[in-house]
Image (tube, rainbow, N blue to C red; front, top):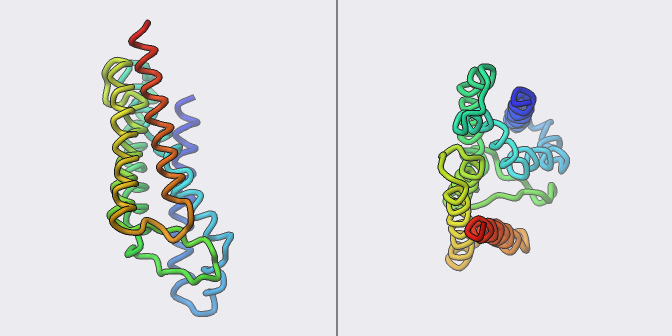
Length: 202
């Protein structure tokens, strides 16, 4: 149900905020530096803030999407405002903390998982992904063809943004990150174009 999905999104956002709080607390005490640099803690942070960012966004946008297609129940209408509030907190904190000039202290090479991006690139690509999630869920309203067109345009823009930025400045010190991100955007664009063709021929 909508309630279960929204609760899952709020739960994951709460986990992210707890991880951030733990990073700040341990960063202020020298005896806890080992914990802060632990690879498992960094893995959890990257998992909730980057890998699961789109699923979390979709979960918290679900009440708004149901409202856009007139499928919402009174309970989902009641969830729309708190879900959007939690989504706003999640977006603001991830954008603020995960850039290379963010508030979190840079980690040493010992942790091995310091996957940060230039703040300009990360803000741009995250905005495109959040817009893509909202568009594909019908939050912006419109016909199926309009949704597919929006998704194709956003996928192409994300691919272009990644490739152009990579030519101008390094995107990440981790090998193949640019190729993986570009491939993901190409997959989104190709799928959206395929849907457009199918809708046009039906």
